Length: 369
Image 1: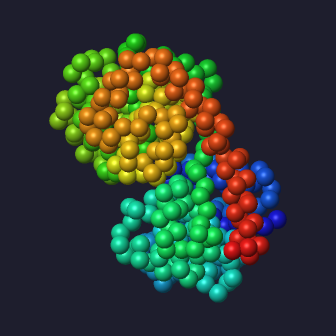
Image 2 (image 1 turned 135 degrees about the horizontal axis):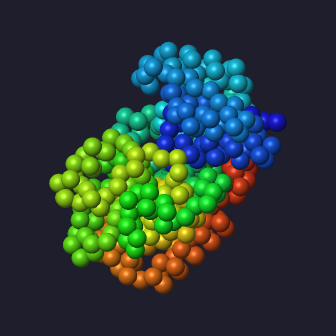
């Protein structure tokens, strides 16, 4: 069986990490490729346990600092030689750099998975360009827009588009789940309308816009609640903003949670308020759980997701107006819920995703590029 080494910076709560773990779990089921996951930094224990339970090989190089280039390259080169994979699949810049440079001369093809390269600094973009021109065999872009941009710099034959997908097994509800009971655990009264989102609490996610939109919504809709699931560098600032807006009694910050499916299932509307993002897994997860979804026009995947989600301008007014409009249209919410679930089941599940990924692996390994 061929071996696929999947390298990621760290296994923590995030869409890229979730995708890497789900990919490995599906690969091992299909038995065409033996997956090995390697993280450069120390990772979250829950992900490690999940990999152990699935009997997936996992290693953490636990770099002291991602900037200790020489010692890190020595460590990863030693590791790659030990694994002797047939292909290396890297996620994000640090993995691209160390996976590529660390394997120079070993004649192992590298495939780089690009998620949100427009957020990178100029120095990283320059380094990525050099790596792409001379060392990386192929690229996977998560949306057509990114693939088209790459084709201006790199031969199109080296570029593949593979839309993000989810593993429905991650979204099983707890035994005896009851929506009203779960809402009561969150101290949400009966008959309230719940808006929610899941993601890293960072500037690009636009949660400050969502909080300000929610403040204006509460001026006319007193029975609304907002739930934000996740943690991150902007958590303190967002909590302070909610306090300054005097809406803390209506906003729930849950922090990182494992019971994502249960929590999302208490929402009436799911909102992706991002200022910049490629293809958020959480939007697919919300749709799979039958939650009508609003996304901003800043998502690179908006044209794909708009078949089942509503697209709004990334602004306070855009978010406010659509949330209010959708909250008053139960029939539309039900239609969106049904359409979203069907779309995800048909096009965005991990079994279809890994089937396509294996075809890409095969093409690269068989030197067809």
